[in-house]
Amino acid sequence: MSKTPMTARGAEKLREELRYRKSELRPKIIADIEEARKQGDLRENAEYHAAREQHGFNEGRIQEIEGKLGSAQVIDVTQMPATGKVIFGVTVDLADADSGDELRYQIVGEDEADVQAGRISLNSPIARALIGKSEGDIVQVVIPAGARELEIVKVHYI
Image (tube, rainbow, N blue to C red; front, side):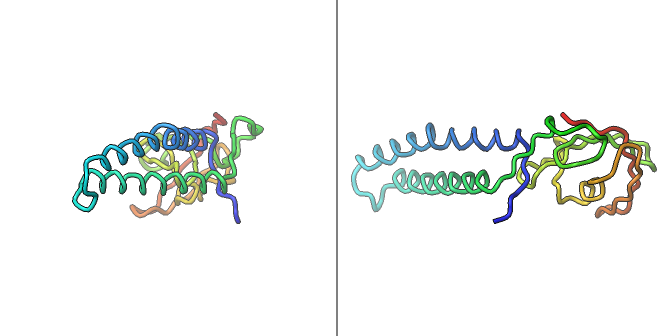
């Protein structure tokens, strides 16, 4: 099985969600199912069916998180030597050569990506163009909106 890269922050968020789902949400759902059972005929008991559905969803999510953590290769970029090269987990300051806009992205795993928060997937066109490049390099990126030239201003290992 191949390992999936994940930042230390992303792995910690998944571990926290797993802890919550197992130790807080699971007992609450089980209590809801027991309470609904006491209300009588289960065939027509909407609360019982809703609680069972919620239980199934929660257990599925627990399995999904455990699978992701099991196949994760956690990379803590703060432990990497700061060479100025763009690698997984770094935060990159960019300047758009055409518009002069300044951008800041952290390159993260698929599940951690959130463009609004400045976290882009390792598999995104911008990240693929940046990986392996260094501060001062200018990269050509082809995105759905067209081609852009981006200059790597600074690479942060934070």
